[in-house]
Each structure stands twice: as structure tokens, then as C-alpha cells.
Amino acid sequence: MSIIGVSACQPKVDTEDAETEAARPNIVLIIGDDIGYSDLGCYGAEIQTPNLDRLAKNGLRFKQFYNMAKCNPTRSTLITGLYKGDERALSFVPLLRAGGYSAIMSGKEHFDKWVPKDAYFANTFENSLTFWATTEYFVPPSGKFQRPFYLNGKEIEAEDIEAEILPKFKTDFITDYGLKWLDEVMQRDQPFFFLLPYHAGHYPLQARPEDIAKYRGKYRAGWDKIRQQRFERMKEVGILAADCELSPPEGNTNQFRGPSHPGFEAIREKFPTYYPWDSMTEAEKDEKDLEMAVFAAMIDRMDQNIGRVIRKLEEAGKLDNTLIMYFTDNGSCPFDSNVDFDVPPGPTESYRCLAPTWANVGNTPFRLYKQNGHEGGANTHFIAHWPKVIEPGQITEQLGHVADLFPTFLEMAGVDYPAQHNGRPTLPLVGHSLMPIFKGEERPPKDYVISGHTEKFRMFRSGDWKIVRQNNGDWELYDLSNDRTEMKDLAVSNRTKLEEMVNKYEDYRQKEQASLND
Image (tube, rainbow, N blue to C red; front, side, top):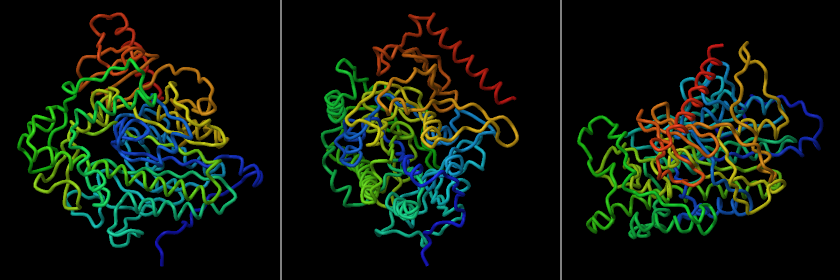
């Protein structure tokens, strides 16, 4: 008996009629993990992402779209529409379902502690296949660092996971589950919401051999040349302005995240720092070529599976009235969570991470990485494809944030945000609908956005001005209107603007805390 089926928990649909329901769009939200701003073909990469490139060519790309700089806060803000909440926070998924949408998901789940359990995926979606954080890709795993998978909230053994391709590989089989559920919901006379949060390209670096082979040797040119080539392509396609400056690699170290697994007390001095490609031996270059080839293979495999989703929608005649969105939860990851340097990256026996030097390439042209509020950690690519509404081939300068997705979905579904939840007034959503941007209109500018992992790496942006700090250090100040890559810290030379921005941020914090204390 197949383990993939529609659960008994069906939504109660109370809709006007099938014609009205057909007019409301389907929604597909796809999320990458630890993938840098420039790691997609349509954002400048040499990595083959033809399916995402197709969505971009026939849709809309954002130059400026903010995440929360790390996996769990990004997902927490996505699902609740809040930067921070309490037991009054609620998921948008039950609201969509109550409004007549089907809702399915397959992929990664990871929330901050403040997110209520009733917002978790198994408690809100009709069907869900979930895993938490850093599971390995091949199943059964090596056991070096593994967390379980859950089918509709119940733990499922590795041997019971269904997969169309063997050996079982996470990026493939979570798509398998999602597509089988998608077949079911597309038979109904109601729109659907499909969430597909991939784990690729989060460590560990594991990929199918045939995908690795496509990239082996392509990175022998080295991170210095590859980064420069991406930078030039990004200007050619219009993602970056012609006068944009490329941040220097020397300032992109990772001094705040060292070896994190037991038994590895040795200091890996070269791992967190930049060093020129040509300073290595040929053998070292070959090792680093393999490392990046595996990472590229992971993104390639993700794109192949996104292609399966697009084809499924196309064959069902659903593509024109489906909004497909893609973004990544944070910038590329430089964390040293390597478990075993004796096993090269790629196979299930390995547990390796991408070096900061390659992560710096992923975040071209920006500084720093995942967890940082600097652009390298907080600014993601964002693609939106909706043939009925979005004009093809657009690149927008307008600012977006992951917090904007909650109100966007409610507007699309014609659903109101409730005034109360759990017996108390709901917390106000912090985002604003992206629908005006999708329609080609100017959206009123945001008062502010925040990002950065916790107060230690907080970023606060208002207009083109931004303050940001590293590891509880002093505030830095940047004018992004003429310094997109944060090369000129104005904290000393413009103390007046710095104080104004800090006061504005502290005012926001006081109001947030007051609302949580109500």
C-alpha cells in the first residue's frame, strides 16, 4: 500500500462557485537553502539552472529582496508574517484553507522557539513530508549527523520513504511526494498552495555522481576568476548597475563560526580566511574544484526538480494562473561544520561544507555571509512568475522582504487577517503585499525592514540608509543608493545620520516589545 496519499484531514470548502474559484490563482512557493545571490544562472552564475532561468525570463526578478539571514528566522517570519511573535502568532496556511485553498508541502522545516506549535507544517497542511535542519541527502544516511523525516507529523523510517530514483536522494524524493499530492489537489475545483522548501545547497555537500561530473574541472579557474566573471555577467543582464563596485575578498572572513562538531578541537586556520587561488598547489586546487563542483551539482539537481513542477503544472493547464515564486532563506554559508576531512565531498559517507572562499563567490558582489545583516547574508534573489499578471522579462528596483509574502497570499486569496487568535488580539503583520509590484505598479516605500541573525548581527534599513553590526560590534552606516556593496562605512563621518538611524531602530524595538507585552 502506498504511503503517499491524501490525509483524512480535508479542508472544508465554502466557496461561491467553481468559476469564482478558478479565477483565484494557485500559489507555488519554492525555497532554496544557503544559496548565494549570484548562484543562479539568471543572476550571473555558470551553474545550469534552465528552469529557474525560464521563470525569470518570463517573469520578474528582484534586485533587492531581504530574508532574515538564517534558516529558522526566515521561515519563522515567512509563516507568521512577523519579525518576532508569541502564542498569538499564526500561520497563513489555515487562513488559506479556510478560504477554500488546498495546501500541501514537502521539504525543510525549521522555526525559532517563539513560533507556536499550531503553526508547524504537520499541524497546518493537509499533507506534509518534513525534516528539521541539517539532515543528510542520501537515504539511508551515513549516520554522521542525521535527523528523522516525518510524514504528516509521524516519523517515517528510511526504508519506508518512497522514491522514484535510487539511491534515494532528498532533493528528488521530497519532490516526488509533493508532485503526487499536487496531482490530487489539481483534481479539485479549488485553488491550491504548494510549498516546496528544498534543503539544497545547505551542507553537507552531497550530490549524485552524474551531476558532479557535469561540473568537475569547471572550477579549476579558481574563485578569483569565477567571482569576477559572475560580477561582469550580473552587470550585463541588469542585476547590477554599471557603476557597482565588487567588494574585496580579503574583508570576507568567517571569524564567528568555527568547528562545531565534537572531537574536532583542531584549529583549521585556512578555512575561515581568504587566500589567492594561485597560492595553492595543483592537488589543493583539484580538491577545491571538487568542492564547488558538488555544490553546483546540488543546485543543478534542485533546478531539475523545479522543472518537474513546472512541467506538471503545464501539462495540467494550470501554469498561466499559478504564481510561482523562488527565493533563498539566506546568503551562502561559510560555516565550518566539517565532520571528516578524510572523505572528499560528494558521497553519502562524506560530511563537508563549502569553504568561505567559494561562499564569497556565491554572494557576489556583496560582503559577508549567512547570519550577517550585511547584503551577503540578508539580500536574496527573488523570482516571480505569473503569466496572467506579471509581464515577462522584468527586473525591479523595488524593495521586497520575506515578511511581505503573508499579506500577499491573503490578498490573492481574498482572505482577511483575523483580529484575534488564541483569545487575544493578533499581532500586526510587518509586511505589505507584493501585488502592486507584480502588477507593474509602484508600491509605497517601506518605513523600514530588518534582517540579520539576532541582535548580534542585526540590520535595520530605512529608505536607502542602513545600519548593521557584526557580533555585537559597533554600528556601521551605509548609503545603499550609491554603495550597494557596503564599501564605505559612514558611521564616523556622518554621526548625525547614524544617531538618527539608531534612534529609529530603538523606537521600533520598544514598540515591538510593547506589543509583545500586551
